[in-house]
Amino acid sequence: MTDGLSRREALHAIGLASLAAGFDWTPTQAGRAAERTRTARGSAAPFAPQFFTAHEYETVRTLVDVVIPKDERSGSATDAGVPEYMDFLMSDGSDTQRVAMRGGLAWLDIQTRRRFNRAFKECVEQERATVLDAIAWPARATPDMSQGVAFFTSFRDLTAAGFFSSRMGVEDLQYQGNTAVPEWKGCPPEALAKLGVRYP
Image 1: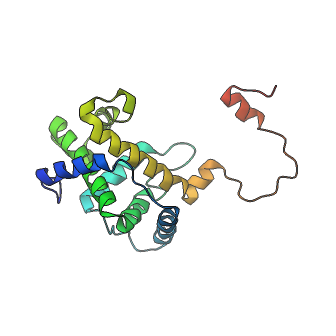
Image 2: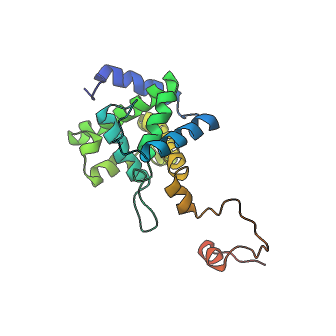
């Protein structure tokens, strides 16, 4: 059992997840989820997921922080509110999108239970890496990992969308906003050096 899904249901969901490889969201849905996330994070009340079960939500929190961990530049995906963002998206999502998400999370648990006898969220960093390394690079993945590849590719994109639509993500990008640039002097020298390019 994977907290709410029997093994048979999980395998069925995984099969459907491969058909719905991408979580296709409209800009309106994404914008609404970002706005709801900002509102929820500004509230004093603890966040209560509307779509995810408690087990799924902890798995999402674990996985988004693997995708975007905290570093010297900014906080992690969880710090930015990405799990809340995903919950709001899924609450508004289609049955196909919901099944793809639930199926993918169940797939992770099946893989780690098979290998390490525990759920993904309970695994240590190296155990998680073993499973994720098998699905993070589609061109290197074996055919039996195709469902995991489809799920993780979409999940990673969704994590990035949630992070970079948050206040923390915008600050991380050093986005200047709609400010007038009186004189364009080109790309800053430090950025050119980092890219290893120069103006002719």
